[in-house]
Image 1 (cartoon, one colour):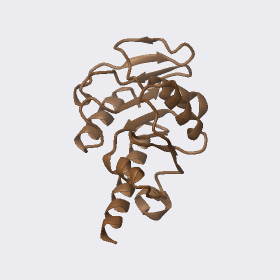
Image 2: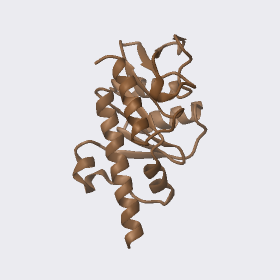
Image 3: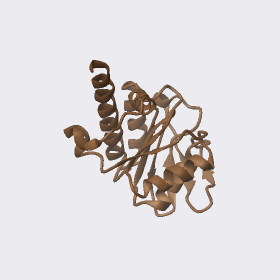
Amino acid sequence: MSCQDIIEVMKIMYQKGMITVLSGNASMKVSENLFCITPSSVPKHKISQLALVDLDTLEWSGPKPSIEYRMHALIYKNTNAKAVVHAHSPWTVLAAELGLELDPRRYVESKYAIRKVAKVPPLEAGSWDLARAVAEKAREADTIILEGHGAIAYGKDPWDALNKLEALEYLAKLEVLKRGMT
């Protein structure tokens, strides 16, 4: 695995409609105290350079990191995560807004991808409040819904984290569609 995988994950999320051109972010630990993360204000399908963030000081080199770098850092500090991926998944956002329960045990696609789903209330993007709330939930769940915002997942590599978000989006879509049919 290399930080290049982060760039590929972002392209896939953009192509699948899980993020808009400037939304979403992904990161990966490159050492005990450093992680690479997508830059801020760069079209996600055109990323060529990543920021490198120090977990201890939160100082960075390279381009300005995503505003969510604090959230990624606190997940790394509070879990065994090796990679973190954040999407603005429309079906997941809608399902949460409708109050639908997203139980990953319901469908095979999510059952084997997601250990547990948690949820945090609406909080300002990029804020320390959001970073702390997500980090707290990440202690118990590997996939977290950010109400009115999106979802974030962590895993052993960027592909594992992406798979969790795709499985959550699949689950959310089925639950929203099922609700519309009853």
